Every structure is written in C-alpha cells, then in structure tokens.
Length: 487
Image: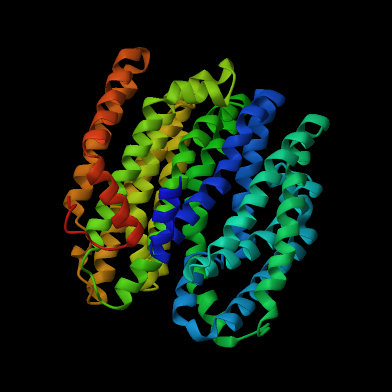
C-alpha cells in the first residue's frame, strides 16, 4: 500500500486528476447501479418501470430548460477566457438560472397541457425544476476544477452526494406509499443543498450577471446543439417511453435493468473521454497532432475490453441487480453494451467538432440518428417485442458514428487540420474484433462453459500482456505517446 501511495504521489498532476475524475464518475454513475437491487425489490416491476420512465423525462427537461450550458461549450470557454474565468463562470451561472426561470414560468402557465403530455403531476414537475437549478451549478463547478486539475474538492463533494442520495432514496422508498415522488424528493434534497452552495461559489468571485460577449457566445454555441443533446437523450431514453406505450410498464422495467447494467460501463468511457478532452483541445489549439491517434486507439481498446467483460457476465449481473422476473434482461445487454463502445468511438469525433465550434453540423447528425431510432422502435418492437429496442439503439448509434466521422473530416478540412489525427483503420479493427467476440458470447449464454472459456482467454491475455496493459494505462493517464507500447 505504501508503494502504491508513493507511486501515486510521483504521478504528474494530469495523471492524478484522471484517476480522481474516474473515481468521481464511478461514484456519480454508480448511484443508479447501487440502488437498482433495492428498488427492483422494494418496488413492483410496474412501479420500477414507471420510475425509470420518469427519469427519462428528467433528462429531457434538463436539456430544454437549462440549454446544457455547463457541457462541452463551457469547457471550450474556460480555455478561451483563461484570464477571465471568475467572471465567465459567474456570468454562465446567472445565464443558466435565467434560462431555467423563464421555462419555469412557461410551465406554470401551461402546466395542464404539459402534464397531460408527460403523464406527471405538478408536484413531480416542480421537483424536476428544483433539480434543474442545482444540476448546472454542480456541473459548472466540476468542469472548472477538471480543467484546472483541482480534483480533491470534487472528490469530496462527489463522495458526500454519492453516499447520501442512495441512502435517503432507499429509506424514502421503503417508508412511502408514493415511492417515485419519495425517491425524487430525496435526490432534490441532496443535490439542491449542494447546488445552492455551489451557485454562491461560482458567482462570489468577480460577480458578473451579464456579459454580452459571454452570453452571446454561449447561446450561439449551445442553441444549435439543443437538437443534438435532445436527440442524444432520445437515443437512449425514448426506448423506455416507447416500450411503456407499446408493451407496458413491466417490460419498460426489465429493459431499464439491462440499460442500467450496460450504462454502468459507460461511466468508464465517460471518465476517460472527459479526462482526455482538455488534453485533446490543447493539442488541437497548439496544432500538435503527434500522439493523438495512439492514445485514442488505446483508450478505445480499454473501453471495448471492459464492456466485453460485462457481456460475458451478463446473466450474473442481472441476477445481482434484480429478481428472477427480470431475467430476460440478459438478452438486451449485448447490443446495449456494444452501443456504449460505439458512443466512446464517435465521441472523439464530436470533440473535434466542438473544438472548432461546429455545433450546427453536430446537431444535424444527432437529429437524424434520433429519428432513425424512434422510427425503428415503432416499426420493430410490435413485430419482435421489446428486446428489439436494444438492437435499434445499436443500429442508430452505429449510423451516428459513421456520420460524425464524415462530418469531422469536413470540419478538419475546413480548418486545415489533418483528418489523420485519428487512425480510423485501427479503430475499426478494434470495433470488428469486439463485435465478433460479442456475437459469440451472446449465442453461448445458454452454455456456461463457452462464457468461461472466453473469460479465461481474456484474463490470460491480460496477465501475459500485463506490461503492455500497464504501459497503455500510463499513456492514457499522462496523455503522452510512449515509444514502448504502440498498436
């Protein structure tokens, strides 16, 4: 343990930050995973399905009523306004509050119509709006500290919220008859309290309510991205809403368990992608393209292996997450886990589009993929059942990835940036190998020996190639190309 601590202390700050934010992402995303075994046993299958659909509406409201100002565009702004970060953060926080307040007033004026569309009552929707004030504050604060590699405070806040939300949520669900409202109320209490404090933190240094340049740039950047963000949410959330409409809340509950298990792997991909994003932006800004492709290839391979482990252990994972009535969820995990790998694959292309502020082109791809997913769901679910939703999601994300690669090439050409910053041939080879093993494992779900054999092969390869694996991890953490380990 002392040796590990000594090695950790010797790591560069970028590597320490990467480790920290990986832990933070695991804790944040892990909340939903930790509570699944409790919720699937405290709530009926139909109640859990209703709660899962409700969570989908939270994501949709968040995009519409916050403009997601704290996302990629904010990180770009922190880079461009490095000497004005205090004023920039304050102004963005105030813009976010203003936008959410406008939509709250619109909701209050049109609540009967909106409630009829969502199927939620006024109390539940107001709880969502309370979250919409808190969530951007937390995101602004976290994003700035990620860029500045100030990771200790982020780890502390994340640990507190990650502990309190599941504990209070389970307690509230156990003792309340209206379990969905109770769980959301616990979440609002925790995130709302943290959000209030961080609103003050974001604003108190060089308080700036309105800055024409900051607001104009943020709105010009984010407004065209709203269809992209909304379409992305529809890609992974519309399945549950449509399954509830076409099949029922019970089927939506089963699908949600598979989705949650698959998305558990997304937290690794997200943490790696977020940690590499500032480094990639810096490399693009400096026009220093050496080493980018190798780092991205290694990170893609890592994410593919992690998701393959989940696919192999899907039956056991579902047994832990839910009772036997949810066992059908195992057949949905392979396509959804593959979707996570595809998401990580194309996120690198999206980051390039973000850096050059080509948000309109990003939105066009997102809208097309979302419409494709919704259309395929309404066409195939009635024919093949709700299990088809996993494959419609994978198909849509795959099309999404191809389109984003084409768009990235156009953006690179426009900005005199070589499209060869990514080695697409190696990336496609990794994806093809992953797809082949995934199909073999899924076919063999009824044969335990086959899954164990594949798992044993992977573990043996990891042990034999442990030096290469460690070297690859070091490359990803340092954001530097190593001569000793290449694909």
